Length: 124
Image (cartoon, rainbow, N blue to C red):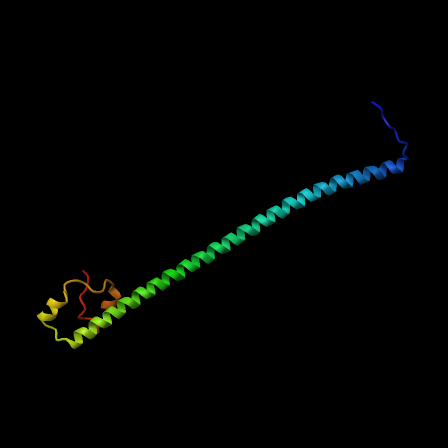
């Protein structure tokens, strides 16, 4: 093996060591910064996932409330229709034969409260 020797003054040796030290330190700092940025990115992604999950839950809650509201409106409409029918038709056995009043038309306690719907058959 052939070795090549350079003659370098002491100040250049110190400068060279300083450059090598700074390069190694810079590489280490870059690695740490990359790790920190990866951690930061992962944290941001987790926050975004959490926000997305909250939005999904809020959306599902809103959809559930809309379905519940639509169901209640449907039941109210059925109750009004039945009440109008009962008001127009005399309440007798013929109506009982035509519309089976033993079966509940509305399966919710909310629509049986009050005097208006007193003649609506109730689920028991």
